[in-house]
Image (cartoon, rainbow, N blue to C red; front, side, top):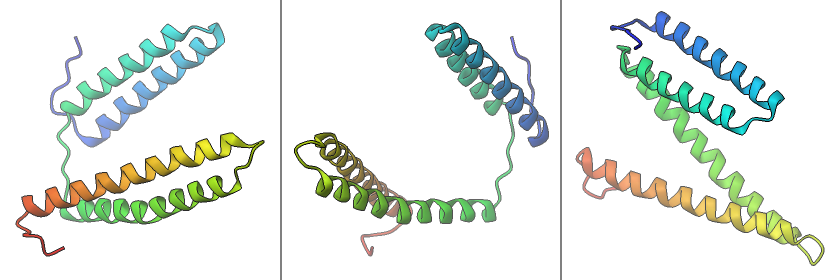
Length: 137
């Protein structure tokens, strides 16, 4: 059993690096041996250890860090959604009889764009109601 009690951020980073090294080493061995089960099990074990280590870490998050993460997420959405939407439109316009896979990729990207926009809208309404907004947005 892994006994970790209330570690700080520096110790947490060392554990993260060790787990990442373990997963990378096991993945390289799995690829060289062409063993899918070893690769899958190493990723699952790495995820389990990461969850255990993260649950034992007391992270202090200040308001500045929260604001920076919110701004980063907003800009990522503002750039990614139109880019993937225009890319899907371009792929569907370039498709013809010989390149039917371009149309299929465009349709898949269109559905992913619509899913992302719908998910954003749902969470926007949810958090707006949760934090006291009454439909002003």
